[in-house]
Image 1 (tube, rainbow, N blue to C red):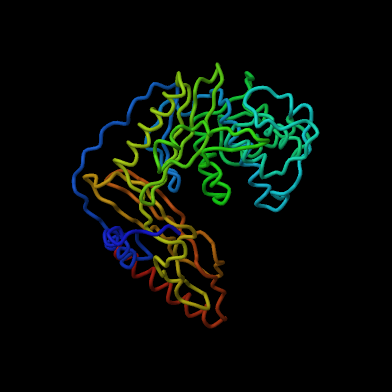
Image 2: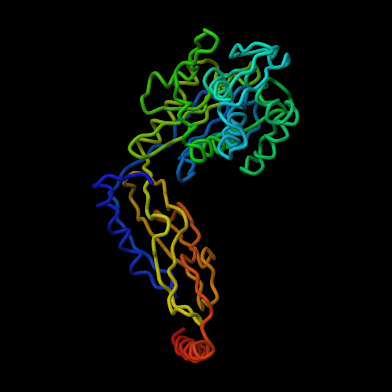
Length: 400
């Protein structure tokens, strides 16, 4: 869990106390007033497509042509690296595994890690080569190691793209070398980057490294922002003539992490400057707040026919929302819990919805779940509850 400052905790106390006042049979809300602040429109960039997303909440703060299918160039290697990280995390391979280098991998053109045909290179070295110096040779070597070839590896990449909800992506290779049927979008690449950051945080540390040396050859990370902004710690650059200069960047300030994707700029310098504009806009005008912890009890509605009369209801993951800083409006939490809850109920069953609004804008929804299981009560307990429920519903009907 991310830590929060004392001041932020103080600011959220009214919000957290609101949960104690919510009634199971009705949706209720608590309002937090905020001082007025003006927010400008997002910056317009000299790029074909872009998006700015909060890495924790997933909220999009700015976008332009974010779903346009474009050549991703070496941004493709984000998926290549993601699949290597996934295999490592699942224990299917280890960092020390030795990968034989084929002639095909060695001959692959473009940016290189400079591995040699016939070598056996540890997975950890190849992963660094893919992420830091954008090695096409390292990407092909890992594709062959994990899937037996680049084509079957591309099929695996596409399966995972579908799983992650990347609807405007199709991979033909592991490198991003040009192909008319090889494409992705700014939104899809932001979503993939969100998973890289959140799913495999231990491996994410590689993305901030500024140099990598292999075989006596030192090469710099091509992400200029790593040198210019201490809050930037990833992710990947890309360039081909078809794609232009592209950059996926991520930065963290004061417990808020943003992801920017900029595609189709006209120079290395431009992609860095335009990315910096997006990140600066997001950090200046928005903040990300953790409203509730996973497992926090938000309500205890009545349950009929169970071995307990009340059910502890909450959320099964942290509730994190990205909202404008001190915007003129109201932050509203609303719990909508199913009426007439009846046992048996299993832990994790969905029993309602929490909606968070700022003013009239819905900034997030989360499922409400049972935090515990409730078994059926005995015969007499169920009989008594049936009678009580009948009269409760009858009396309630008089006031509808």
